[in-house]
Length: 222
Image 1 (tube, rainbow, N blue to C red):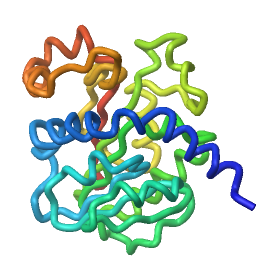
Image 2 (cartoon, rainbow, N blue to C red):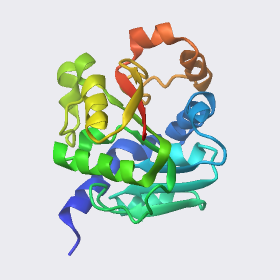
Image 3 (cartoon, one colour):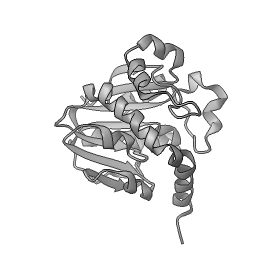
Image 4 (cartoon, rainbow, N blue to C red):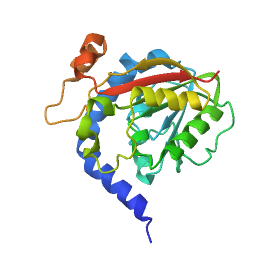
């Protein structure tokens, strides 16, 4: 018999993302090339935590790639150069200590069932990152969303840029960048922005203060 949690997760992915796969990939191609690549070296070993359909990890340029997700169907969307770890992210990762340069996560922590699960996931990221390694965390900022934050069935944890930073510090990270407003809440809607406008948006931080509803927090392992 199929795991009911796994079946529900697949249903959520199918309903929320399947009709937008091509466009989401285009968006992330711009985001990785025009912004996140400046924090990730071409020789880096990178893990995408809660990878979804792999839009980030497929598009980032780096030497070695890992992706973690509980949804088994994620592997169908990952590039051949990505090693997929199908598991609960709060359980021990099958990676050696000090083996990663970057852990990236986007719109993931709010889906975890508890703060304990989030803390355990961050502890694994700390263990696996080498000293000086970086975690990059992006997610919806409940401070600017109000009730709309709960429009998604699988949102459990309400986070702000400050609670995200504090969670990282509790696990031993040194926070280096905190942006309260970065990207809009969703990049996929009825009126899709041309990807050239997304590139322009990334170069206009004043626009982030108007449209941004997701935080961006970066921290390093001492």
